[in-house]
Structures are given as structure tokens and as C-alpha cells.
Image 1 (cartoon, one colour):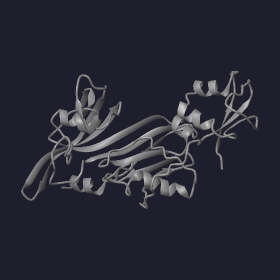
Image 2 (tube, rainbow, N blue to C red):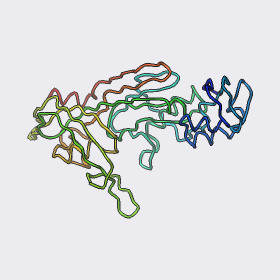
Image 3 (cartoon, rainbow, N blue to C red):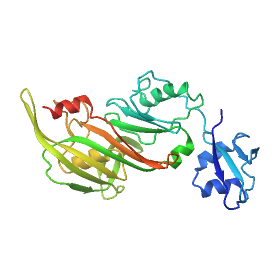
Image 4 (spheres, helix red, strand yellow):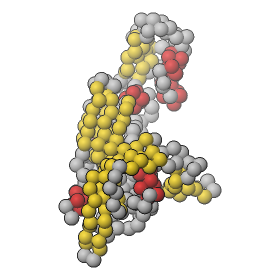
Length: 296
């Protein structure tokens, strides 16, 4: 069943296309919208994208004209933090990649979401708003249609992490980041570089303490982190660049005897809900293995 979004037109447009571009819709969305008659209505009449708009017209457009996501379903229980007809928030565990790959084709969050949504919306198109690295736990936002994805605003994410060494005051790490590649092959690693993209990380230390495990002993700091820009691996690259790699981060630090993955969690998320017309805030507990280290 088609789900429409309605717009009361307050100024004339030569065509619906110009209204959509003026409203910030992507070319991909517009291309999919024009494919099927019935995706667009003006005053309850089916029209094409070339139809003109006058003041007072009621425009209805299909909020999900994209093709159904057909990746392999994964039967994995979802830890649902929040759900309404526009958004789905999931607490992703560490070790579960967001998207399928050759090595994680049958076990990934995307496949689990599609399996969950199949009974609710048979033509569901997957739209993950904020992807997390495989080893990063925490809140992932899913928009249930194209317009909900476009209209979500002011997303703010707060991460918690355990990093090596002692940090005793607030830090602002303002260093550009670029992707390391050889030829045209992206080896999925980043580094600080003057010719990279802007990236700023705010680090607030919560407490420093010593982890002990048999003959192993490591000084670590629990930190709260907020980002500007949100580049891939930004937290991991920035903390490593100042000599405080994240605990368990084998790519930018070293293997840890205390945890078998990067100790990083997207713990808090807030965003302006365009249909509730208010800002919503969500927080999840720290994963059990990180919480256990805090009690060490």
C-alpha cells in the first residue's frame, strides 16, 4: 500500500520537478518517483512530474518510491530502542557489521532489519542513517522511507570509549583525515594528513584506572566523545594520533588481553523528529564486557 506525504502548495511552480528540487529532494528520489503513475497526485488526481502547481494545491507524493531492498535476510534478534512508523532505532552489538560483505554475507544488521520489516512493509527499502563500524556497539537509526530520511534533523551522537593511558582534561582534536589507498584500492584505513578532510573530535575524560588481568596491567581512561564531521574511523584515528588508541583497536593500536574488540559505543543519540515536532533523546547501557572492565 502506497504511503503518501502531503504538501500544501504556497507558491506556484512550473512543474512538480521544480518543487521537489526546491524542497531538497535528491535526483535519485525524483527519478524513482517518476517511474510509476500513481506516485504523484495533485488534489487527489494522478499526475506526472511535469504537472504544474498552483497556490492552494494539495500535492501527495509516494514517500517510498525506491525499489525494495533484496539482500539476504538474517534471522537475528534486534534490540529495539525505539520504533514508530517513521524511524527504527536499534542497539547494535559489537561484532555485527551494519552491511553485508563477502565475509559477513549471512550475518549482518541490514539483513536482520530487512527480515524484521518484511512482515510490516513488504516493499521496505533499507535506509541506515548512521552506520557504525563492525566492532562499534550502540544506537543505529533507520529511516523507514525516503522522506523520513530527508527530514530528520540535528542528529547528535555521544560515544563512550576506553582508551589507553591517562587523560586528565578535556581535549579538542582538530586534525584532517584521509583514506590510505594504494593505486585505486581502498584498504579501509585512515590517517591524519594535511590534505585530508576536516575532522574535529571533543574528548571529555570521565575516569582513569588500571586494568589488571593475570600478569597484565594497563592504565586506561573512560572518555565521552562528540564529533563534528563524523569521518569514517574518526575517533579511532584521532585518539591514536595523540598516543591514546582505543583499547582493543588492532587497526590503530594493538591487541588487548582485556577485550577482543574496539572498546567504543555510540551510547546516546538525539534528533529532531519532524513529525512529532520535538527533539527525542535515547541512551543505551554500556555493553556487558565494557561494564565489567569498569568494575575491574
